[in-house]
Length: 152
Image (cartoon, rainbow, N blue to C red):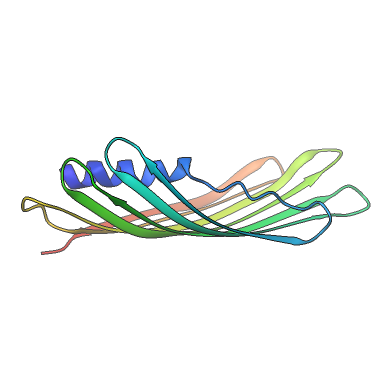
């Protein structure tokens, strides 16, 4: 149980490290690479993030934003002896208009995490997948899949 609680903390901390790639309204892709390390009290989390963002605005005022992001991370040095490493990949797309604001938004996200703790806890291997789509003022059915297995 200890490894699962620490794992969830490591994953949630990653949400705080999201890279804000500034998109160029001049209709071109922006590529950013960033390494960030932060100590959250339960261990040091380091992220190597590669982001490609493309924003296109039409003369009619429609704006399309597409972002692809890959984050390779590790969490180490926790007081309970747990270490984790993993990858997060996501793709987002948004369409906004001057007249009506957000018209469409989609997210596909996949995270894989492997971890282990000292003291006999079984290593863990997890995959988290999220997909949803918002269009025409409604959230369309999506899916969330979480699979974890402890290795012998």
